[in-house]
Image (cartoon, rainbow, N blue to C red; front, side, top):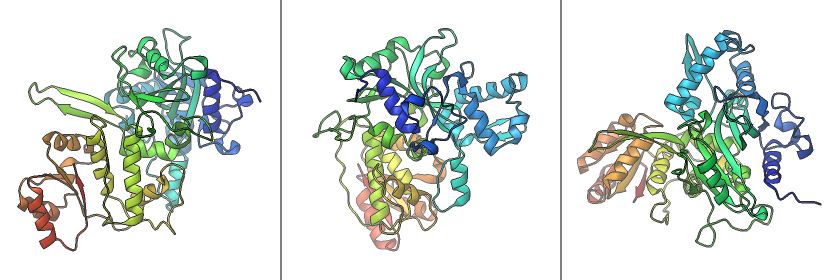
Length: 451
């Protein structure tokens, strides 16, 4: 058997796994006509680069098919079957909302256009809820090869791009070390050759950009030319960098086999990825920053959620981390998701999956029943973490109703009675709060995260 060691070979390998479409048929299968289930893929449709509208950065076929299946009245209302002023007005509105709010928020909250409220994504997969499962199944996750994205330089193409219901959420540049090009070359290609002024590369337009080879992965949430900052998206190996040997394939195949499944990506977009706005206390200037979890952050949060969902309250965990590892975001993501976590019996609950028992905690997070914890208490000695938790959770809930700051021991009683789900305190105040928990709240259950 001849092994294709080129970039195109890696591209084909990834797309074939995601869609289930054999390599020999890639040029003949269209996204709208063939469902991935027919080929045993991982839930992804094969996109056609000709369906991508460069003016509005949207796959028109995928968008139209999603709306036709879920909100059919909008197909006629927006005249989606013809290139006229009505459709252009809607697409301009959609593009403007993505520019203003970012693709993640547009997918979560949809858009309004005239008298119409447009849903653009159905998340929160809830096993056992037939209506929720049906709505989630209507989503169209698609992957497109050789996407020509530029209106000016029409021959420029990305190796891969992935879309949800026609909206791009991630791009990929692929390299193969066997051809003497590595992930470093992919990073440099983004920095040198991918103009951040192009619509698909503008801030918030995609959630993440991946540089990938057969050994390592790096990610960037905002392209800035030479200043683009790429972080590792590796699993780590022998207490160091890189990825472990994979006896079943490439070292980096966890990206498309485990991380970028429809269920996993949905969970990331709903509970991790976001745009955070912060304010400089000295200058008063506001700054927007796009966040996407690195692998180790996703790993630790999902491992903890899965174990807590199975074991219940009362366990102890120790997480080792290094400086600059994004600990503050990991704590904020964990605190937020612990709020709604319910127990899943490992014997009778959701089955194991390949990626860190993800189905178990997804089921626990979305199922009915009493939450495992009444409140989440975060103990820190840094005011910065306090501010960062607020900024991170703001994208998922109303901070005023969710987060409280226990500066005095008496604050805890007030916050618990007032329904605060996340309570932040300092290590200096914690001993007094701990006494109050033991004396007055023995019937309640708390998750305590100590930094």
